[in-house]
Image (cartoon, rainbow, N blue to C red; front, side, top):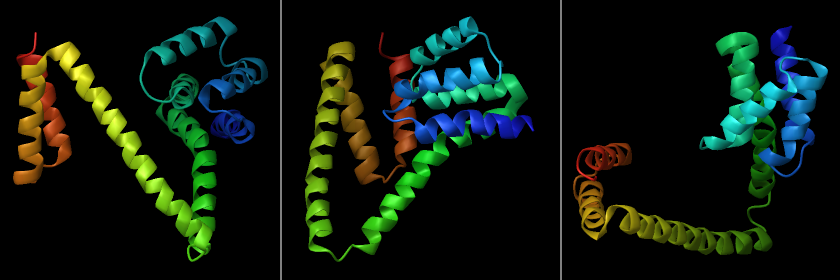
Length: 176
């Protein structure tokens, strides 16, 4: 029964909430603190503060922590699933709709415009990372990591995870 309660406590705010993680936090608080009493308002506020200090979406971090506190690893799994399922269902519905109308000229035009926009967004992100790397690590270290990464990826077809791991090791051992 606790798993069902956890599922509902996170599924309902995520299915009716609009605006992403920060917008549904009050709805989650109403469930976790007000309805089920799993945490006090103070404990919830501290959990929220800790969650905001860590990377990744806030709603899934909150769900994982509360679920774990209430029912262990199974509770964390159920809570995270309940947080992710609404978005997953909406994405599957949207993909189904796009696939059904894939021959439509409007859908084709939309797809043609999405690709360059994504490419520009990725280029902007890459430029931001490059400038941040130069500012924090220096030009020499950034060039070394970039050149070695490019050679490993293009010439030796190394898996990107290993390239990232190598850059992390380089940064930990060499960059002050």
